[in-house]
Image (cartoon, rainbow, N blue to C red):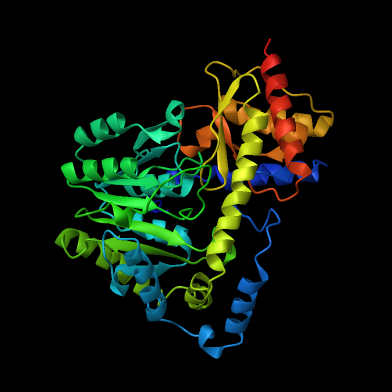
Length: 434
């Protein structure tokens, strides 16, 4: 073509969580039975949405109004309901105009970074969630900027590392955090959130906090929402229903915006995001109508509590099984439904293998592992040898070696097999080094 039509950030759009699915499908064609531990979809893993939530959605489907367009920012009554919930927590007070709906948080993230000035960077955690890191890298055309999460401190942000990078890189305009965190399952205490907001205040930055797992907290963790600590700093919290009802297929998320009226530049930036959404007319109507009815139902709190207890049990079950395995370290998840397994330094190399009986599968894996990161090499061998599909930690914009598992398996008999098989495979793999 006579003109280069490729976006400068096209090579940054990677999503290891789903990319490994193609490999798993290839192996399934060769006879491998796959156990999907790669993606955070509770429905795919067998969780059943409570009947009373289904009944609410069923009744809404029968109402003609749910088939039409709604206001671009979202349904007024729903935004008023959500604003009231924010204000009940204390801290920063918002109104309906501070809430903007999207077709899932993936849509929100694309616009948050897509309409940010290219030279303005947002620093995020490492390990990073791929949607955020890829979108930020693609908007800038450079590698995503990161601060370290410390596995020796419960995967808490390294505040010294964060502040040093902010201080000496004046292209950084914002700080991103995920609380509870994906992929580590860490939950940040209020003091940690206050410290991050204080850094943003000192260097005149805005804060983005992904709170999609805000109501999945357990194992004694205590946290708070960004609205409770944001004070006079511009920022936004990202929320949704995909992990809570759970209804991932609804593609329904929203942002809560703080202090847009105090900062003209931030207000203009938010207006650009809102105007971009206007070009799409609106986000999906039906799930928005459901929010006040479901979240306002007296049964909803008990529903959230029951799910938190369920994930606490699974987190402790996985930790008990994997913490005994030589060559790795794990931190019990305290929020969300993920856990990161970290290999000991120098535990992996490019010669280790797992036995794979099927010669076609073995040949496929041996071809796939050529030149890949050593943790990805393990992941491919684990997939070929056992059918268990996990995600390599280096796929999360991270130099540390490990992998992410989920806590979503609903089969109480299968989960212990997963942990046991992973543990035995790790020890066998490490021991195979020549």
